[in-house]
Length: 136
Image (cartoon, rainbow, N blue to C red; front, side):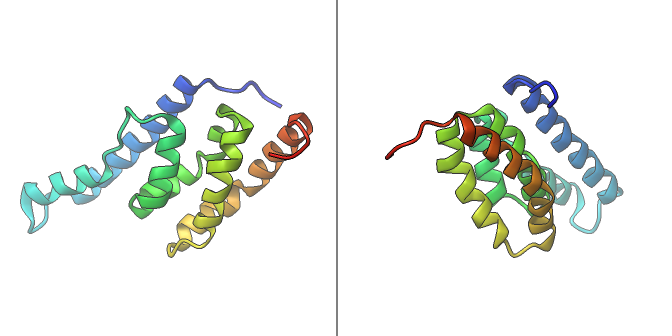
């Protein structure tokens, strides 16, 4: 496989992706509609990402509770996050997240997860070879 990116690189990539989506939304809303500048500010606030949260917290939070766009972006980050956290954290927090996302009401969010499943399965299979056996 390729070189794994560190948490800071992954965070910068996520922030950059979110910033790109924010710019696209801003462009789509210009000129401001009947709601005026307050409507645009509300839309930008809705897309804001808490950059102070650790990656695993951001992924689990926004994949569950974000806007459809945020959910899609952060669901695509699940494999990266799985590589960044200890296997126990991936099993406890990210595998159940996948089950929740698979039942999301938004088809685009479910589709994003489906696209990531081969990578997720590969990561789990690789990690399984290294995980200790026995009762937990």
